[in-house]
Length: 134
Image (cartoon, rainbow, N blue to C red; front, top):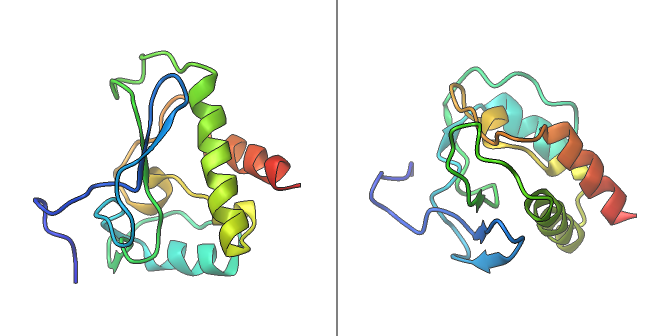
């Protein structure tokens, strides 16, 4: 069932500017919302991601979602601690599930029209997560 706009919690964790990861929710949270089924299949198969051009699949049941403290304007500077915390959180989840870094995606890769995360590339986060999984 697709999430309603007023349901919550809206993420599994919040990463603050100092790199602290706060647990917000567990199980199903309403972070991913609707996205592209082709992207989901690629993530599950840990293959190269296609361009997300549809919003036809509920991602809330499939993805872990983290929010990063940020003004969202593309200009708020990223501290070194936040991207590092993103990689550490992603590596911990991947390690727990036996996934590789190819299971790490950003909202803009899942949902057409989304622009986040800003401030770093998801390829850099996948590479950093891969290095942490070694």
